[in-house]
Length: 183
Image (cartoon, rainbow, N blue to C red):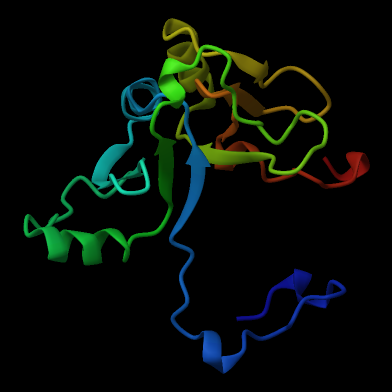
């Protein structure tokens, strides 16, 4: 597969053969209170909890969430479900270090305050206007609404830990990044 961006400096035009079969599986965010984070990601963004793993000796838990197909056959056997989970794409891993939920002063760096680092995760939605109404109905904090700023038709919301989440409707972005004269 040839892509126009293959000529960008630093881009290797063809993936090395040794990387055949590599699949991006998940990203991890640390969360202060898993009950609050899980309510947001399952109740507001519609994700499903695929697996929870507790590590008592190290005092942390992992929660793996995704949006599997409605007709996905999720294995009930724990080992088979673990294999199935780590075979999925687009998983969000929430990591909870035990005790953070009880500390009112505790906060994780969201990556957007100085010094900047991590920026955001992104969800594509079928209807941006309907998603914005849903977020408003659920009291979700906005960083940027779709009609604000120079980049239109893109929203940014915050999760309970302050991480930014980009919300976009793919078919509204055909001209994103195009020179103003060609829009």
